[in-house]
Image 1: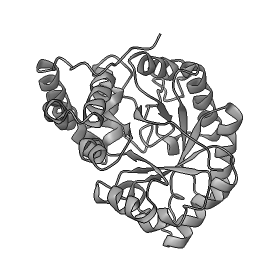
Image 2 (image 1 turned 30 degrees about the vertical axis):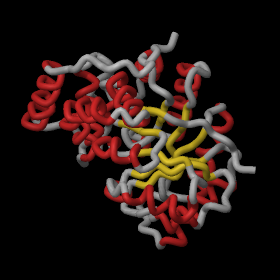
Image 3 (image 1 turned 180 degrees about the vertical axis):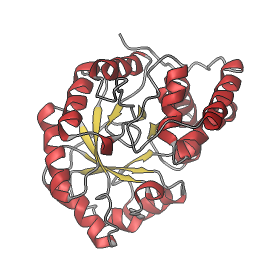
Image 4 (image 1 turned 90 degrees about the horizontal axis):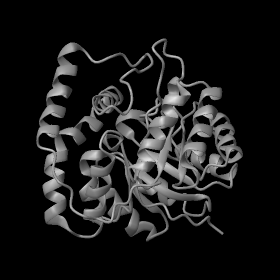
Length: 309
């Protein structure tokens, strides 16, 4: 039997916090996690792209998993990103996530190697067979180069632990293609911030969001408005949010999101190399977008958002 999941709503791709010497700041990371849960998000993703997975050691990834488990305290599901060079390495991280007691893993294609479609499928199948945790397949071809097409995903329909598909391709037609191929076999998640409303309209029941790190209540409200079909209200909020959401689609999305988080007093903008700080001009650009957003920050419609205790 495939594991049943009730994942839905906004799951911020949480940033990993560093000290000035760029060592892992686990206390600050835990504070970020707790703040997001208190502000009403529906789940947490750690060690994803925004969490700088590939810049962390195995031991640091485990420390972040443990911090997330402790911060969530069962209030929301916690999923850990798995981004490794080999299938064997990915299975080992997935097993660590299970040992820590997380609720699932978000598996990226094997990094560096540009795989053929059947190799891409075999990687996900290998990880899924090695764990009883629910597996979310993560597709982000602009960043990770290997494209998990609807056909590749459909070929995994017999793999019981593969339960969810996060698409960051920006091509929302893929949600319809997946449904046409395998119906409701997979839970669908939006993975690119600036197409979230369109994704929800086409069947996404969750959103793994970058900019909700800085604006968790706005993110959760936008998602709930779209899910409820309250499109007039959703589109008004979407228009305000869009300049910020576009930052999630840039190659330097992590630096941009962390800077916005810093401006909001929720974390720092420090990133580990090879990610370097934004240039003065880029920083000013993001600051201007934030200044405009904060000056015009809307009163949010009621969507039943309740802050966690």
